[in-house]
Figure: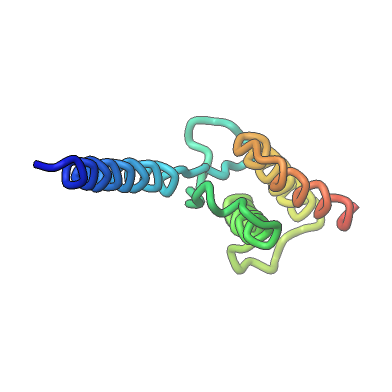
Length: 127
């Protein structure tokens, strides 16, 4: 084998290994998930798993989309999106506190600066 052929074979092998490693890394990133749990941390507390990837935090718009998913899951877990319109003011207040706590906990556990920024901006709009 000539030096040129040997270098070509080594380069192609290296490219294939790099592509394989990248595919494995991407698969691991795609499997990252977070559970949004109700404020009650009891063992039987309801939870919804929200799937996202590391790439979901590349831009503010993509991060905001993940935040909307988390918020929807928190509302569902806490009973605000179950279609029930017959809630007392006290029940609605408790449910909203549950949503706020579950969302804050999920954002804290994910621990991404841009997601925290989106969460803080949303909290300022409401408050």
